[in-house]
Length: 74
Image (cartoon, rainbow, N blue to C red; front, side):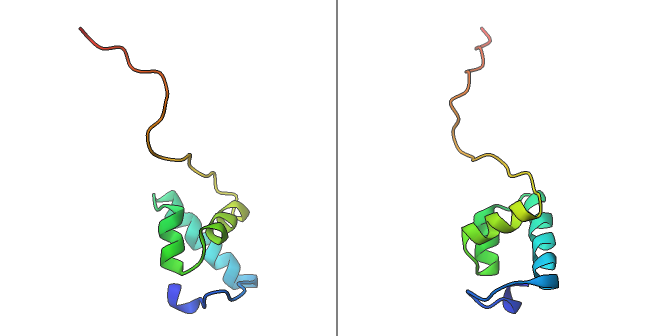
């Protein structure tokens, strides 16, 4: 897939639909947007937009969260 895309080139029509489906499948399998962007040679924003167009439910940001702390078992 990555070798068929030239950086900055427009992706339209069937090629865009195929790319969106491929990105959706990989994202839903656990790949990050950043990893997909690097793999395809496109920007984070481009991949994010493609996933949004494909109606993918995006995951929340990772890292530490400030939720309630679990009670310690004594």
